[in-house]
Image 1 (cartoon, each protein chain N blue to C red):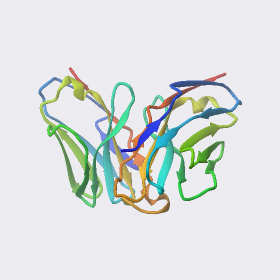
Image 2 (image 1 turned 135 degrees about the horizontal axis):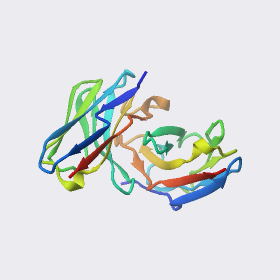
Image 3 (image 1 turned 120 degrees about the vertical axis):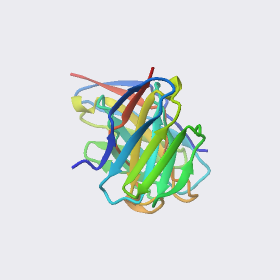
Length: 117
Length: 116
């Protein structure tokens, strides 16, 4: 039983294209996140949604647009892909956005490796 | 913004031995959480251990334990009886508990190699 799943796992595309990455969690969590891991393995938050509401929007180009159709899904759409967008994108979820104990622990999906040519 | 520093890019340990990974962080908050995540070659981010800043007792999960020094803003991870499966990149992460900043702030990671 996959807790946090992402599709696709690999994505190779040409510069200028538009692509989407899908994320689903079956943990019943309220909060979902997108992180980007660059070529140096550095991880940084991009977005977070709590109950379908955007709560974190870091300094990310507006070519990146998250969409949360329901609590269990958070998709990432990227327009006009650039070479610098090549990275591994991780989706994560937590039971709540802010709480005590393990409720706020974030669980990660397997990652989507995006390569822009 | 919180800064998390992992000063050891790479560490090597003999199988069955112990290795300690260092992590320091910079914050003005008193209430927060700290985590260690493991990323093996499969790329999956796996939670290893978590520590709540308001708890003085150091967290332990089987062979993994932390040394949390709040005043020094230090959060090291000790891996005891190292196994080949422990080979991975380990990330230290910080999360605020109070201000509404829900994100994890990660260190740059430490690559652990286990020698057979």
